[in-house]
Amino acid sequence: MSRMPRWPADSRARLADAALDLFSQRGYSAVTVDDIADRAGVTARTFFRQFRDKEEVLFAEDDLLLPSLLATIAEPTGPVAAEPLMARALGALAERMQSAHEPLRRRQAIIDSDVALMGRELAKQARWQQAISAALAERGFDPADAGLLAAIGFALFRRELHAWLADPSIDATPLPERIRAALPSVRTVLDAATTH
Image 1 (cartoon, rainbow, N blue to C red):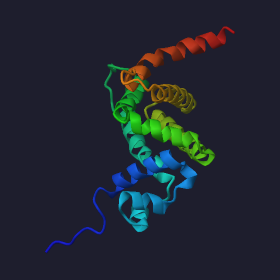
Image 2 (image 1 turned 120 degrees about the vertical axis):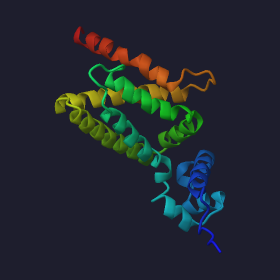
Image 3 (image 1 turned 90 degrees about the vertical axis):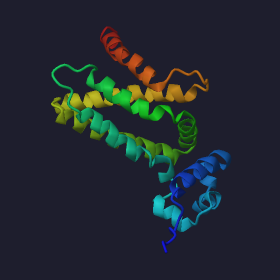
Image 4 (image 1 turned 45 degrees about the horizontal axis):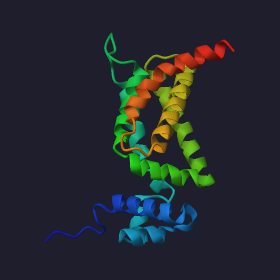
């Protein structure tokens, strides 16, 4: 006789969905781990098997996105790249996020409503930027240039991500398109800054 699992196989997804619903309805600070577990139909112990704390429910998926981005940066492109490295890396990240517009929009609204969550997001972004800079240096960029490129790429991605999330239209320009269209503007902005 096979043993029954101690918690449902889909409990992580159910907990994440329940947390997003409750945070949206009541506000982040008014929701407890017990509330989330109860809504998901599991115990608080099951919650803590999946997430360290209730903040992590909002940030756990980022842990899957960063390795994917770093792997894209590390991919060999041969002597002639079909697409510039940063466009390829940021475009691939945007492709992975495209199908999650509504959950990401709700998640960002929750983060923007709480100072502690905004602080955690900024700390995450700093870690990402460091990791991206290191990956670019591994690809042969001068470390100082790698840091600058990571900062510029991150700022551009964040701007386009927030514009995409703020657009409620079902026909909103897809995030990958926004990213690829915005990349050439970096040179334009930098050129303009040197003439003022």
